[in-house]
Image 1: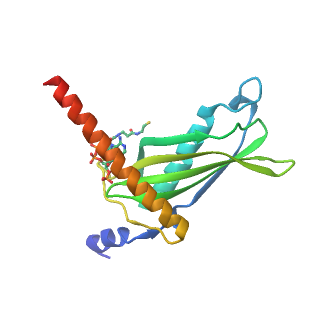
Image 2: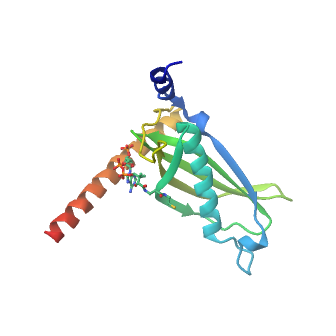
Length: 175
Ligand SMILES: CC(C)(COP(=O)(O)OP(=O)(O)OC[C@H]1O[C@@H](n2cnc3c(N)ncnc32)[C@H](O)[C@@H]1OP(=O)(O)O)[C@@H](O)C(=O)NCCC(=O)NCCS
């Protein structure tokens, strides 16, 4: 296969399901405060890892976290809980991807699973020289995936507009 054929193949649309990633980790005493509540930062690291894996699966490239758009905690995780992160690409633009992450905690003895949070992160795919490189478009198939795609598209436009306005303010205040 020629290099051109390879890059065309890489840019063929990919279903959301191809990036789906699950990361499960048992919470230990070192992850928590003396009351047994897990530190938010421990969960944040797992969120970043799961989301990065989804972005790499989708793009087939090295990916860097460029922004955490939002991270909401609905409740705590405790020592002894199994925390499970489910990540998948919601939206792609040229070189960036928005990844959504669902955060669940399970009490293993009772098998009681509760959603404790959710997160949205932006990753950029990089080439071998660490420059942003195009990613395959994501193919949102189900109604739920299509809704997430459209919501993420709005957020992409909103973030870009905000960055441009902030840049313009900075330029005008230094002139
Ligand atoms: C990712 C990086 C290479 C992008 O460089 P850049 O000069 O901003 O490149 P561009 O302006 O061409 O933007 C590339 C993409 O990133 C997106 N982007 C850039 N800054 C962004 C931000 N703050 N939030 C969301 N998306 C952003 C752009 O929208 C663009 O996406 P698109 O191609 O899909 O439209 C650069 O910002 C970087 O290296 N950041 C640090 C990443 C890192 O080290 N992460 C680990 C932290 S521990």
